[in-house]
Length: 190
Ligand code: AMP
Image (cartoon, rainbow, N blue to C red):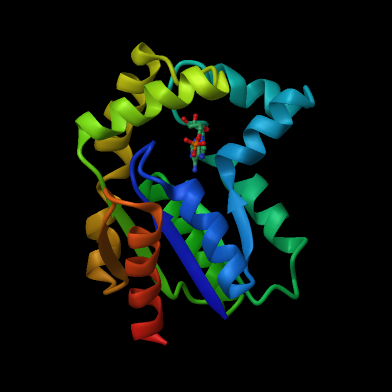
């Protein structure tokens, strides 16, 4: 199995490269942000709860995220592997995830961290907000999301570094260049 975590701040290209990895290695894509957006537009109970946090640029509480993620994974028992995009985002999530993957005997193969400067992230997210109308891609909420990333999510880099799972990839350049660097890391480890 190939189980990849695509890690990085908002706007670093996790979504774009996840889709390419899914295609190339025949994996199941799990984006917690996409799932919450779909639940929100279907006005489910989970979606409405999640929206109140997303609109502020805050993280959805761990319990809600973890329960949702586990139930989505259970629906893909025969998957060849997964790309986790936007999960885990806190140490609690990472610990619970580890526990669950150990029970399933399904180790994480690699954590790919996309490295992009804050200036470039803000530029990309403002552009995405204008083009897609995503409600949390406004300058004020973007700043809040980057702050949340730095405080709550970035510490996971050390967590995975200590587990010898971390691979950092420079995330500025053409999509193909960046994607090739990601694939080189994956192929080098297999
Ligand atoms: P994303 O599309 O990954 O940028 O996620 C959009 C928003 O969904 C985030 O700003 C959070 O409010 C929420 N979200 C997505 N994934 C998680 C997660 N793993 N933990 C907590 N909140 C999340």
